[in-house]
Length: 85
Image 1 (spheres, rainbow, N blue to C red):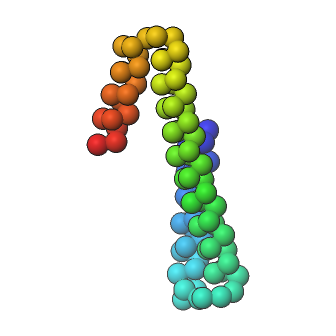
Image 2 (cartoon, rainbow, N blue to C red; image 1 turned 120 degrees about the horizontal axis):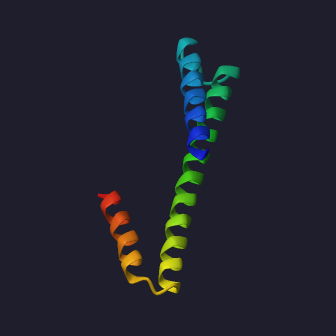
Image 3 (cartoon, rainbow, N blue to C red; image 1 turned 120 degrees about the vertical axis):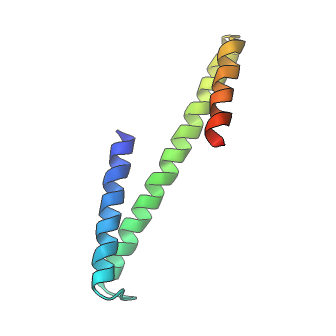
């Protein structure tokens, strides 16, 4: 669901950017304000998604440690390390 919202915000941002470019990339006015607004919303959505992803990773590591399931713990940790490469 969050990814779907992120895709919609991306499409709105691209649409706003195209309108702004088509009007000659003005530095003020309603096209400029719209472009800045949708850009800000898209960036906030990305940061929120990253934050939620990091929290979910931390929670799953914590749950594995609390249940003393070392195979699961190192499996989760390994997945995160391979994903960051």
